[in-house]
Image (tube, rainbow, N blue to C red; front, side, top):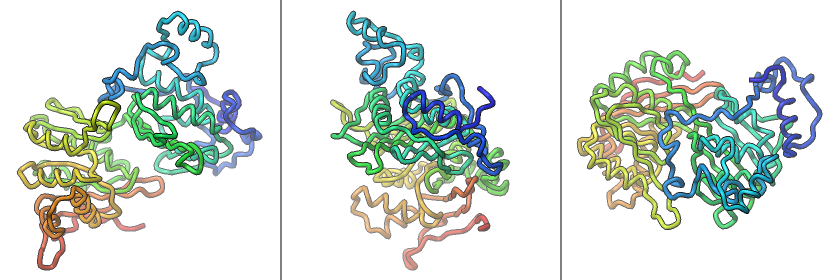
Amino acid sequence: MRQGRDAQTQLLALGKRAGGARQHPDRSGDLAPGEPEHQQKLQHADAPDVRTEGVHGAQERPGDRLGLRRLESLAADLLLPEAVPPGQEHQLLGAAERGTAVTTPSAANTAEATWARIIPFLRPIEPLIRDPEISDILVNGEQAVFFEKNGRLEPLIGVTVREQSLQVAARNIARALGDEISEESPILDSRLPDGSRVAILLPCVSVSGTTIAIRKFQTRRYTMHELVRVGTLPDSVREQLAAAIERRWNILISGGTGSGKTTVLIALAALISDDERLIVIEDTSEIQVTKPNLVRLEARREQPGLPPVPIRDLLRASLRLRPDRILLGEVRGSEAFDLLQALNTGHSGTLSTTHADSARETLSRFATCVMMAGVELPYPVVRAQIGEGLDLVVHLERRPGRRHVTEVLRVHGYDPVAERFELESLYERPRS
């Protein structure tokens, strides 16, 4: 790490190098003592901090299986014309004329090779990409950049990225992933080889200009005891949840975006006995679990020449794999019906997450997702089945600087006469 330069000086210098930042005076001497630490101490490394260890599928993505992503390729395939690194123009053009392969310095690693295509056009925010403490980077066209660090979402002051650079970065990301983004297909939702999730919208659908959201892959896995230490939950809740895992209760973890649902799920999954066969099903692989008898299944979007493989199909297939437990990354649509059938047919100990605003609202949200499957079941019957199959709801909220478990509900059943769930509050965090 280089030391001694504050964030604004770094970012402005990088922006000038790339020609991507607007010219702003150096504010390094104007930072008030009370300004956020990241604005003063963002550090800059010599290479992007990209890791693939522990990331399932980091070397094997749908694009790889189709032969669309290559570690070595003709120069014309390696980078878009606008993305030729400085000093390599003649090497790449010469190789293209000869019809030979070219290997860039970072092509030995898929993740680094992907970042090499992107960073030249995101130089003004390069320190954000390299900072391991930053979890989310949000680029709202040329207008503004925001990032999340230690649970706080903050604006990046004095730095922007040119629209042209954003569009080239977007196309390079898509190409590296064996995907496409264009006016005909202006939305990209995928995952980088290092596990980071990326969503992109082009100006034809985003009034703000090319919009990019990067959720960086977090390699650290918290244990339940560590979650107690950082204040995510009290020790009493840790004990309750550990007992629920031992009793093989079906648990649904709810909360808003970035509230820590997956972090808690991973910590709970670590408590599962190594003697059990675990099936993990996800839309995009991000659940870091290490077990001796582990099967990972990942959905596939529709691709040229290949039909989609949705979560519903994977969930049905998993039931034929003799699972002891099923971990479903997220319930957000019609797959809720298949999950509900599993919960009510003897598949206990299931863990999953969903988006909801409260623990009680989670139950209604689950029922709504079940109805999205188009099943001919009355709504009260669906709610009754949820009352029978689900045992526990754990709800999290993100508050400034912190993520907390705010509610834990025990589901005892459903009362069809009163038309309400029979619930017991095991924990509720006091409002501060």
